[in-house]
Length: 233
Image 1 (tube, helix red, strand yellow):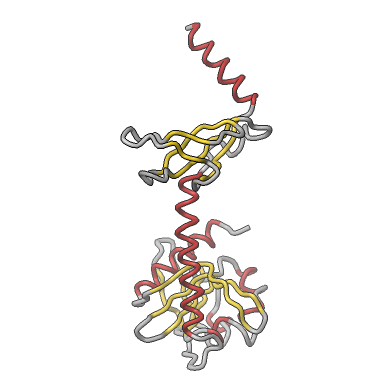
Image 2 (cartoon, one colour):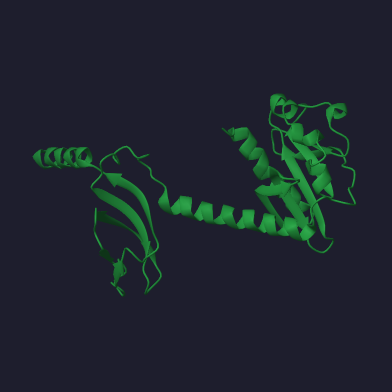
């Protein structure tokens, strides 16, 4: 499981790439080299110069030492023009960094320092167009995932979803295009748009919907009990 530190360093690496006059950058870029599947932590591309930079994040020494990709003939230095390793301050000795890679260090205030410049690779294994396609796809997926996560975040963490009969969903109205949340029962076919000027009947079988969470009989019983206590006060 990815640590919070590793996730944070990946995010900071994008800011650094953007400052390097990068036009397109993304985390978690899936690459295929010599029948090997790699996931680059961060990729940045300068369209004008047709130049690609890859940053591999290492939050711990163990992570660095067990990564065989760095030393392989299909490693990040071999598939991009420039490749870096980003670590917390003083994690690695410069002499430990594989040939060709640059070393970036980040301090507690998220300031990134270049400890060693990378060596340019003039003949990357992957074409720039391929890397543009892969990086663009990763950036698009990240945006859509973030949007979807915001829309469908379940604050109950599924506490009442077992054997649920009522569901909280988000749905887009085909008429006004507004997206709202609705409570429905199992098997319900339509909902009415919540916008007062619209109130279109939304067919749930055709509309773009996402199920956020469900509520079972246990939840309904607790809700009824709380309402009764409230009335008795």
